[in-house]
Length: 192
Image (cartoon, rainbow, N blue to C red; front, side, top):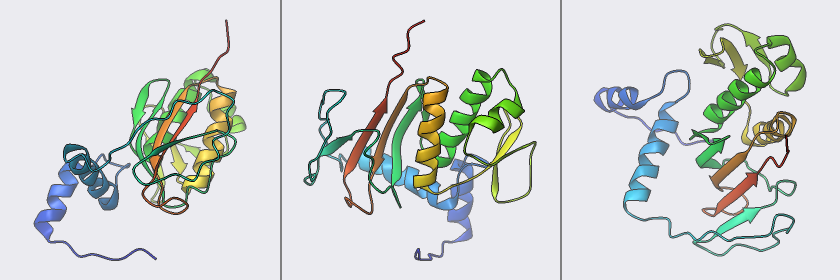
C-alpha cells in the first residue's frame, strides 16, 4: 500500500498547473519534479553499457549502473517508473503517456480504423471520451483503460512488433533492482 501524504491547497494548485490533463496524477507530477531535481543535481551517475543485439544480459547490477535488458528477458516491472521513453522517436515520460503514444501510432498504422486497432492490441479501448478510470486521447478520440507496468509492457511489445515501430525505454526499477536503471530497446529492422 502506498503511503498517504497531505499537501496544502496552494501546493496542490501548483501541481495542477504542471499536470497534463487526463495523463498526470499528483504522484506523476511529483515524480516529474523529482526527476528534474535528480537530473539537475546529478543524482544518477549512470553509464550506458553497449551490448550486441542478441546478447542476453545476465548481470546483477551494481549501484549506479545502467543495465541493458534483452526484450524477451524483462524482469518484473512492478513499481518501475519511466525516466524517458520514445516510440519512433516521439517522447513519453509515463506508462500512461507511453500507452497513449503507442495507440496513436497504431491507429495511424491501421489507417485510422478503430476496429482494426481494437483487433490487434491487448488494451481495452472505447471510442470517445468516457467516465473515470480511463485515459482519453483527444488526437484519435479514443479512451483506454490503464494497466499495471507489466501488462502495459507485454501489450506494448506485441503492438510495437506488429506495427514495426522502434522503442527506447529507460526505466528506474523499484522492486527487483531497487534504484537501478534499465534500458530496453527494440529497433525495427524491416526493409521496404
